[in-house]
Image 1 (cartoon, rainbow, N blue to C red):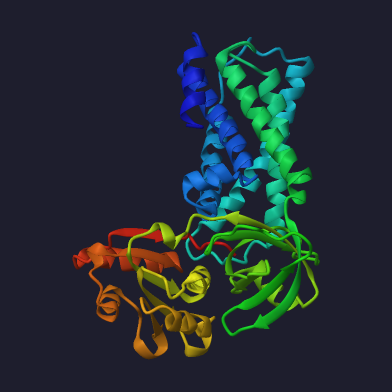
Image 2: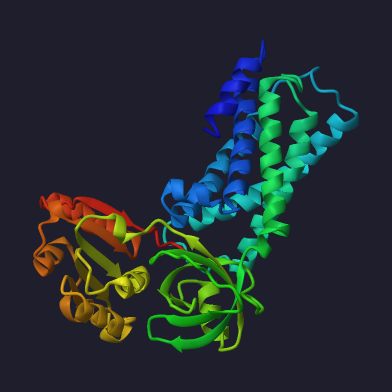
Length: 412
């Protein structure tokens, strides 16, 4: 919609402008509209997060918007518009054009960062996280500059046209969202203190206790956005909550998958202050089928740990958890899963160690669980290639599950 609506309005309001100008203008308006949408998503609006199916999918949408901007921006710049005689090359209009030229030189490198990260076999830590965060902040500054450009160079339509009003609205949303993330969003999180740190073989396990008011209602398996009052860890980052304590305490089990999480493992200590913003996520087994298969790959066990903690003797769902790890010592929270199995007769745990049992695949999954897959809801958290392979092979052998529920699991 952020591409279709401005393009349609441009076409309807372009009058007798030639095709080249209209196409270039559509590309520019679409890019501007998408930038406003990306800045809005960066505020993490909960109603949008619930609508798209979780914080992980909201972040994925934000990422793909950034990737799609580059071809639109390049098309707008290099195809260009034949508007000779329609732009007054003086005053505010000239200044706006000059600003846009500078903004273009800043914007293209920022967008290239998004493309670089999508190249095959690209290392996750190639671009340091603090550089990534600075680039995102600069994107907001560039958007403000481009807003001045679209405000004062309103051709071939005038400032009162529907197209101009739409772009003005996009400017207000984008600028407002950027200012919110920079000056108001930092006040949303609640303060916690780290009470325990365990450097497990597969993860850094952090327990945090609220300083004052914690979170009254959180769903098992949800996301929180956390940061630490420590150099290199002050920028907010999303992680799944692996335990919700009755006293309001929260636990995070974080694997070192990139520069931020590797630094976190070395830097955090008991007594450190944390800021936590919670209540995100749509990964909730309680809205699923009566028979469920949970499949965890590595540190993808985190939401299932919280799920298992919530199981009681009164649990009525038939649940089988297959937990895949490379080595036995990499299993996180195994004692909690075994305790849940003791509490609930309908919860079964299978630990699959690939170094001993081989790679998990669809055939092994069916053989291990003995479930009737067409009647079973499938809940997955782990590496995306593993999920795609398992689902594809289950379909190929006629064992497709009743539903598939998963987290994108691409945070670093």
